[in-house]
Length: 199
Length: 103
Image 1: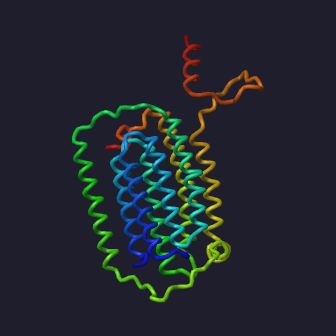
Image 2: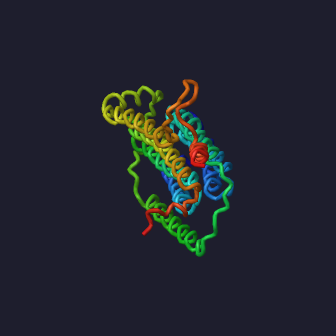
Image 3: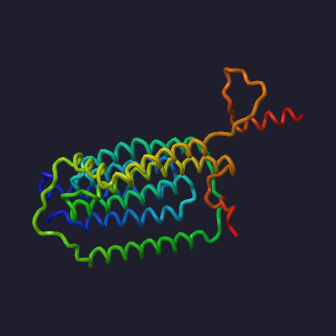
């Protein structure tokens, strides 16, 4: 990274502030659509942090995969389960929230002390940063990480098939299927039609 | 004053704790998935920080981050499919109503 140290520091603090503010919004906002869009802000600022860490390819992959695929998927899911639902009040719920907050804060305190007291063995000399990370990543992926790489492709195929099978609607066996109709039908229609045939 | 490894680790820890809080307290099932994405991103931030500061010549941390991103994409797809199926089954996305396995 060719920026001056002060510029890097300012960029880091701005990006971290954006990231943490948006993450608080994701967790705490009432409207879930706002949360989904704030999640995109979190992903974009994390990608900026990756660029600060000299990882251009992973930053681009982060934007492409998270903002382009995962976030769009989440927004589609929000649209598909679009139900304005007033959750029923549960007594003593605030106790759970306070307890969870306490536990999370203690985890954060523990992590902070551990991070600060651990002597990280950094070499004082400024290391030679490789300028083309894509070549280095490709070398790793096709030599010593080849097996996980291929397994990841199998896992992606399994996830794709599994998601389709889980999310599709039930097939309705129909005796008289004209060739122009889809073989599946929404379940609500199916139940209505079976009721009408029973009547 | 330069960028330190500790800064990235601390921001990753903060993001992780926010994700855990959201994971446990949120009642909307889609928000639970979003909190899981926050957790995975916090871990990725740690990996990238270590990769840049401790192993800058052989960037193994970035390879790990790429694998985590891959798994996260697969997990999001399957998780959202499960939420869709359970929404059709129970007609709600309230996490408190998913108590079939409660004894």
